Figure 1 (cartoon, rainbow, N blue to C red):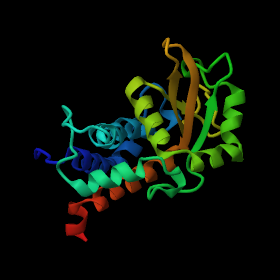
Figure 2 (figure 1 turned 135 degrees about the vertical axis):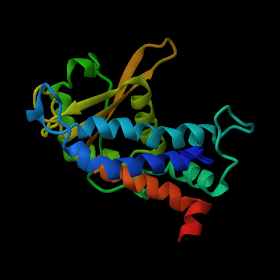
Figure 3 (figure 1 turned 45 degrees about the horizontal axis):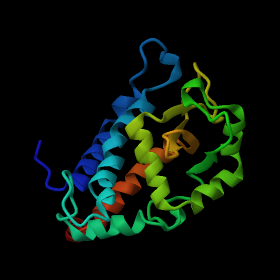
Figure 4 (figure 1 turned 45 degrees about the vertical axis):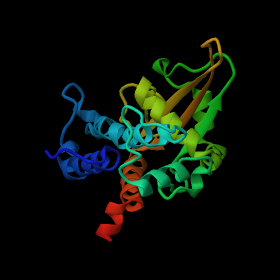
Length: 226
């Protein structure tokens, strides 16, 4: 294993390669207690996608307004990648991002009490909201900065839930969709809202490929390979 120079680009590349090359084996790997529920592909995708998403966000995007080096700051390595990340993950609408595909993401914000606790299952009313066409439109129009913040927070703080083919929390059924939840707090550290992103497992896997392709193509390494 070589020591990477650019963690924000090289580690996502390596994780994506593991997803692609190990996928046939993952498809044959079943939960021992419930093999009827299908392969452990969702767990594998979530595990491998954490560094794919969080490393570029944490080591590039999170430092965009800083004038000095952070303790894990890749900005100096490739100015083109840094500029691309700052531009794309800024305030533009998600639908303008190069890794966006219409219909993949759905988004809603919950502000009314009681706020959802995904550990208790996703309430049916909110699941219905995420299935509406309006949720698809909201996702396409949301700022990319908000979108990547929700993903980052969900992965960092455990805000991830598995849903069935209908977007419901039903234990004992095969998983076909993913939910990413991120809380919003007021000045007193009181939870005042919950942001929710939903995507199907196949769409999520395809998104990871587009995300990594964008990172590589944005920098000097991408130009040399072209």
